[in-house]
Each structure stands twice: as structure tokens, then as C-alpha cells.
Length: 375
Image (cartoon, rainbow, N blue to C red; front, side):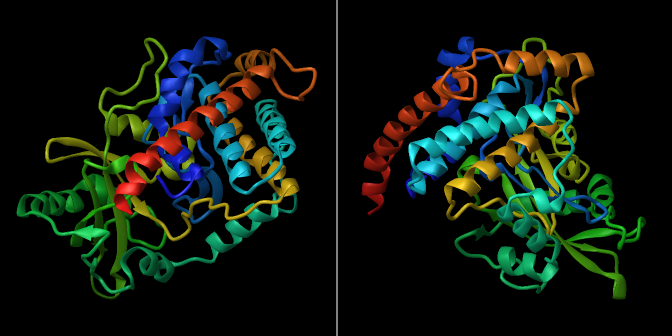
């Protein structure tokens, strides 16, 4: 998290909600729908469904709850504003980014047609094209070094205890995982699954201190045999606040899967909840087409088109959960308190400014405490 202010913003979900506890009453209250809960731009990207179709959707749902859709928009705006500062774009570009987030989100709420490929930002078109061309070999090289049926132990992958190995073998052979593994049209629906290799996966700050495993699973036998790489992650209570009396699954793994099915259908159909070592987990098979939206550099014009597109992705995820009356009412409420000097509601701009200042100060303090010790 000390690598850059952008990385800090993306990894400090709890700080965002600490701020929200104080600022929340000033934000509009939308319909009670499933929200991402951690909607920074890095949590959006290409996802493949069981048929191999690729679309940009929300790809990380650890924090998903039934809550206020405003929270997703503020978090998205904060992450893109932080990226703009990181790329040394002028403040005027940040203002335009916020304006386009509002336009893109509202267009999605009112049912504006989804952009054709030619209308998508070049960054997005290139990402989707690259995603569609990827296969098992690329995924294996990135995750486990090569396509051989083993997971190399080292910095990223740690050895398992006997208890962990036994529990993962049982999980890999279970009916929910077999059902998950045989969704692809190229695989037989009655194929058996078995654990080939597994390791504890050291991945990301959100899984520190929690169960996280990479599973290499053999699917079918003989010449039909394929390999799948599965991510098993412990599900814990969300930091994102849920709406009062929201009807959500009490089990955190089931909560994550249910939220994914509403917000990101491509991903939701490819996830299952389970119990492992008496803890709640969720499981998904990693597909070659699933990639993260990485922004290495942005020009002002591209930044605003990317912002509008991503806001539209979030807007459609929210919209499909609302009826017509809710969409109309929410579009009006979302648009309240328009600023005379900015084509966006003042509550959103004020939130972004406050959050940028708070996160910059927290980031510097984080570096002082941790990066200097590491150096």
C-alpha cells in the first residue's frame, strides 16, 4: 500500500467507511440494492461467463451488501480522482471526470443503450480484445509459472498443513465444485474432479490473516482431462454498511455469491459458497479472460471517457435491481444539489475533495510508519 497514493486508496476500504460514518447523512439515500461496497476502478474489468462471452463487470465482491448505491459512486469517483492526481492531470480534468461519472451513471439508470465496441474508450476496447485472445497457457504462466500440473512453492505460494490438504481434497471432490468446474461447454457435465495440487495463496491486503488457497483441479480423465485453477477465499463480515433490516444471507460466503449474482452475472454464475475448516469461504474458477483494469497512464480526454464508461457499468449493475418507479425516483434524487460551477451534484464533488485530502494525509502517515521500516 506504500507504493503509491493510488494503491493506498484502493487498499484502504475501512478508512473510506470511517469517513462515511461522519459524512453519510449528507449523501442521498438510494433504493436498497446490492452494491459492490468497494467500488474502485481496479475492481472492474473483463469477466467471462460459462459460454466464454466477455463483458466489463464488477470483479471483486468481498464487501458486497444490500445498501446505498451512492457509496459505490463516491468510491469510484475517489479512485479515479486519485488516479488523475497520480498521472499529474490538472484539477480541471478531475472536475470533468466527476461530471462524466454522473452522466454515465444517470444514462445507465435511464436505460441508454450500451455503447458499441466503436464507442468504447480505446483502453477498454484493447482490454476486452486482449482478454478474448487469452487461453489456459497465459493464465498458467501468470499464476503458476507454466502449464504443468503443479503449483510452485515460494514467495506467493506456501505449503499446506496435512489438515488443510485433506480439507481441500474433500472440497475439490464435492458436488458444488464439480458442478462449478463442468459449466464450460467444452467439459462433460458428468466429469469427475480431483485435487491435483494446492497451496496457501499470499495475495492482496484484503486476505491477510484469512484463509486463501490456490487449487489446481483435474477435470475428467484420459484424453479429455483438463485443468482448472480455483481461488478459495475466506469470507468475513463486510466493512460496508448494510441497509437496516436488509434481507441478506447470514453466511458471509453466501452473501458474497448472492451479491455477485445481482451485480456481476458473468462472475456470479461461476461462484459457490462452501465451508472449509469450519470457516465460510467462496470459490471461483479463474478464467483466462478474467483480467484487472490496470491504468498505467491517462491523458485528460481518455480519462473522462473511461470515467463515463465505468460509471455506466456500475449504473447498469444497480439498475437491473430496480423497477421503473425506483429508477426514476433514484435518478432525480441522485441529481439533487447541482452546482452552478460544476455539471455534477455538489455532494459528490465535496465528498471527493474531502476524501482526497483525508487519504493523502493518511497515505503519508502510512509511509512514515511502514515504508521507512521496510527500507
